[in-house]
Image (tube, rainbow, N blue to C red; front, side, top):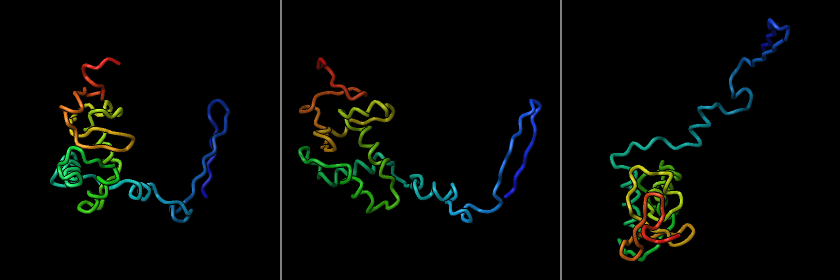
Length: 145
């Protein structure tokens, strides 16, 4: 261990300690290893994540406007083709494109009106004539609160 002490102009002593060695010597994972284990690699596929998610939903629902799905269904479908896909990216993409999701307002750019939330964690394809119109914040248009 390397210890350094210095005295400031105000008469205070400042002590610095430093361990010479690697994180592994200390039994601690390095920050680069932590990042690698927690986060999936950046999306670098030839298809946009938004389109990949929508294709997965279409596969799950077979384009049936009444068939419901869960976020885990979408993730499980996507991981078959993209094993390193980030689960939270999939979730956020569904929130963004879900007309009545309360978190939609956090993703104002690039929204598409694709999904409708029928219950907690349950979605289906959006049907404008049945579900009405919704704004970018997930609020129904023309309906008084």
